[in-house]
Picture 1 (cartoon, one colour):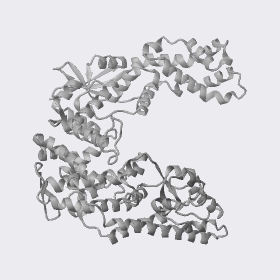
Picture 2 (picture 1 turned 60 degrees about the vertical axis):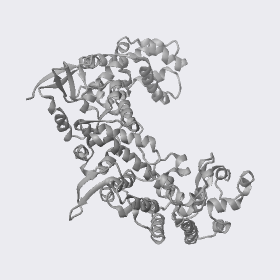
Picture 3 (picture 1 turned 135 degrees about the horizontal axis):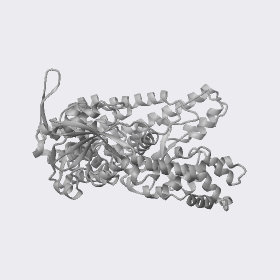
Picture 4 (picture 1 turned 30 degrees about the horizontal axis):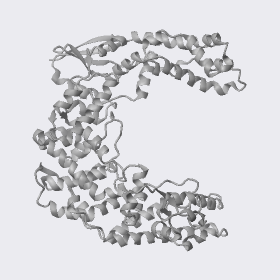
Length: 637
């Protein structure tokens, strides 16, 4: 039986209780951290005397502590403010006339231009001068006067006037800090059975928009699993770093000790999924685009585990139940190791497109969406280790995992994947199949062994490429602004140049640019002749190529045929550039020199040029399509 009562605490009491660890954070409250903007808005609410809600505490009689069930971010922000209030000083704390008064003191004729720099000067001075609440209370206005005259020497000798001008704003901030320490924060204190606390926490947040679904999972997925495999110890490391980052912000997390946390090696499912996403982003940067901020929760690990335990992505709320039934405590190590194994397999199948030198040098992230790569990994996992049945409407039943050995059908499917997975992967990107949420596609493809294993003849592959090309020609109508290459263009370039580039080309220090053969500036100048009435697909793949960076930048805005001076310092001949990089001949671009072309003639010439070159590029890809090298068995983990 639980009971509750109303209470209140001053801000300084909350601060002291956090310092003394009388107020602590329970395990289910570790999922959410306010941004700097949110903290500033909350302090602004306090400054203006506006209502800000109630904090919810649980009285832990055994430990003689209070657990913060709701209001963690408010308590933490109060703690931050009291211990270092200066960062919360902003433009709103400066009287409207102050910058103008100080600007006039400088004697500068155009003194109005100094108003914003003076505001910034004062704010930066406060931020860098006061390191504690005691510092603010001991503020000396003359100190700012000396700092101001140091930056604006023409004001020297008039320090008293600076003090007179600055005193109201700084005094107001000093008084504000003192008053905020005394602000009373309303609270509700719950007593009794602590088993209901995760449910209380979920109910509090289920109707609001503050917490994402993953952050609510952190509150309710409390069962822990011990990790014994050293291959998985990075999962512990990422969680430890996250909690240490939170404690550095002034949050005391109940039952968290960095040493014992690492020693015990026990994680709940939220922690496993959170850290799996971080580990995959860290280990496979070309496959996964994860947030590098350790506090932020990515969806990657949650979605991947959900797919591998055989439930729909939309049912991820019940993942902890399915995980315990399908995996459980005994198989958690091998389950996660098998996921990593399947990631290695996926990388061996399609990683070359994302590791292609152009893409790697630009650090632009994967060419695919998160759901697309998860669909491939989970498809491999299910085909290799899952056993299940389907009912009359294709719903999955009796899902189970046999993780010690591969399924009997795996060897045959593995060979199909080697031949075909990369083809389906490329077509999906070119035709934007995964545009949008993609969760329904994911649910279907995970259990569809024909999707990545099905043979795709050249005619079907060519048809998909040409459909994409024709669509982009219609979409790209450019003149002044030319869109940068998108993932589909980068993928096509990888398809085109991977067979051309040697292994040495891929690993040496040379750099390449994606260049417009008919350069953007040439095209813009030509289109200017038609008074903006003509727009063309300047960024079409038919006009794109890779060029060695040195040669590309030496020729400047000209075509490779516009001036051969750049060739004198090039390690390539013009013929070598044509055969390896541009796949053109000089006659392909001769029409650009005819300034008498009408608008319709110019459009026709350009479209014929990119169509002709695109067909040439497709034929180059075709010549390699059926020569795909078998991936050695040792490469597929």
